[in-house]
Length: 151
Image (cartoon, rainbow, N blue to C red; front, side, top):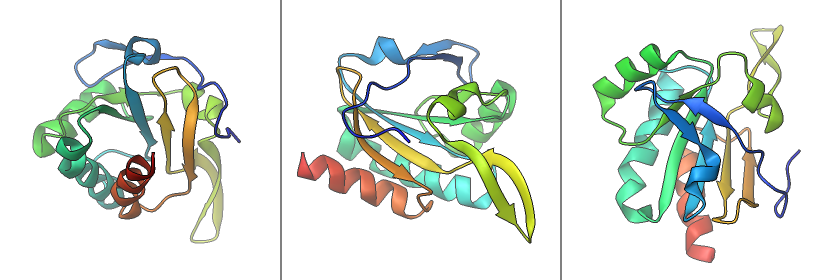
């Protein structure tokens, strides 16, 4: 698992508008990177809307979400909820794997591999500041604001 102080794995992914988004391009500010299982589902919508609603309070932090969804699916979801931050497509879960946000899950007794809902706060220098693995959708915005208040 990535720990505070570790270098955040660099990556380039396409956002919901088919634009390349690079973590290294964000070096002048902090990044709140959250991994979510599937666009337009109840928990993921709760999580993303919660982050959207606090974005003006954390305007020095770039919020970005990552899921295996296609850019088209991400764009439709963003069109409905107007998140205002990049939704990044990781269809082969390569980036999720680098962040250890891909792994075994269990639902109704069935085991499978999938996204582990998580949040990473990354410093302007590209270092991990905080890690929240298996975070609840509702807790995501509160945990982020508390971490920012403490720093």
